[in-house]
Image (cartoon, rainbow, N blue to C red; front, side, top):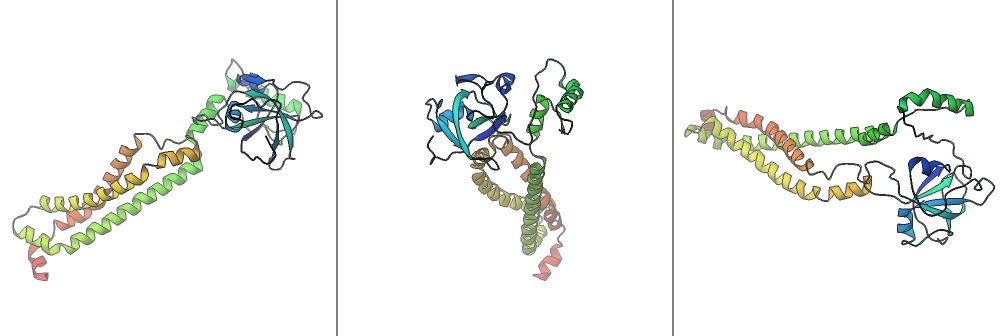
Length: 288
């Protein structure tokens, strides 16, 4: 890779046993070995997506790439092998380009320890803490979690982001309800004379309320049609931003949103509709 080519990729610092522990296959070249240490030339492994995206499928083994990582010295590294793709997020349907560096060649301040076991992972926590303490008494083990727990956490998403989305959605619904209520109430007030005439000619209260409700739902239908047209490209946009980790493209979303909107429209319209049925025909005609 030439020095003037700039590409982005995930940077992962690992130990030589990382790929064997996770069952990630070696697809080309060699894996890290004991000869790769802090004094030897820097070497890296890349994943298959990195090869596909930046080398057009050609073997990168033996090529030099320059890594530009924040708060780390820049330098050239030799690609010595290609490994299989690994998802960084369990719900992500895509793979991202990744470069793997050796911990002994680029030590980092914090890292994760991964264990494979045939027993309950929770039962290993005390032994894991003891082992870490034996290595370095000042090295804290912040938390331990099984892989199932990691996947469940990722399914839950970012709690702050979820709360923000829910807050904005509720505010949007509230504003929509206030807008529809104000519009229908104003329209019903302007039609007081018409409603008085209808009641004087024998119209039933259900006819009047039905007329007001239909007017509200007509307004909602126009807004829903415009909103649906604008929402069609949103799944692709959110998928490109969040990497498929959010279910915005699920088919059940649209009927659910429609049902919620119909409920909001009904609640916002039923008040003006009920007031319209209590119009005094004599007073309405006299005021006109």
